[in-house]
Amino acid sequence: MKKDNRLLLLVEIALMAAVGVILDLLSLRLWPNGGSVSLAMVPIFLIAYRRGLGAGLTTGLLVGILQPLIVPPFYVHPIQFLLDYPIAFMVVGMAGIFSVKVDELKRKRITMIILGCLTGSLLRLVSHFISGVIWFGEMAPEGTPVALYSFLYNASYLLPTAAVSIVVLALLSHQAPRLVHEQ
Image 1: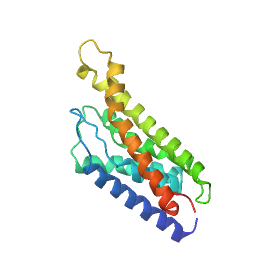
Image 2: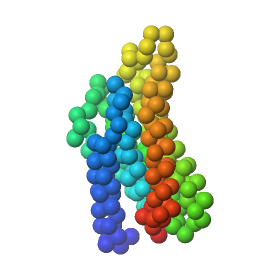
Image 3: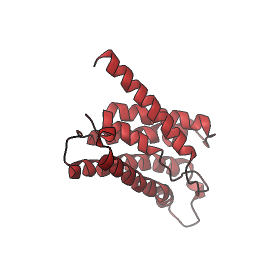
């Protein structure tokens, strides 16, 4: 990769990470113990589709590191912090394995967007789920299995977030495919 191309890639990663953090500030926070519906994953997905797996993972990691610097995080253990912030957002970048060229058929581009968003969201859910089971089991209502509570709680905001991300990225792919997909 040429030096100019690497610099452009680093600038794109930095910009998308910053946009992700800003979008997270504009989120719908209805859950009492953390979690929100936001567009914060869209820039991570975008760079993952546009530049591939490495760029997606890096952007997600940056979002997961920067977000708790702006909004004070809630954590009870260093490993829980890693699972709920850097790791949770980094794995969203796994959508990069579904990256396709801009000249692919629209149907294939949309299919890859759906698969990538679902994969990244599912992996983020796994990270939050593990954290919830290990460190937040006491929040489960009496008689509710901790694993079920953690899954339902985290899925309640991640499924809508995934759906919104799919819609936004599908619209962008239709209207501005060069913005979303590899050249």
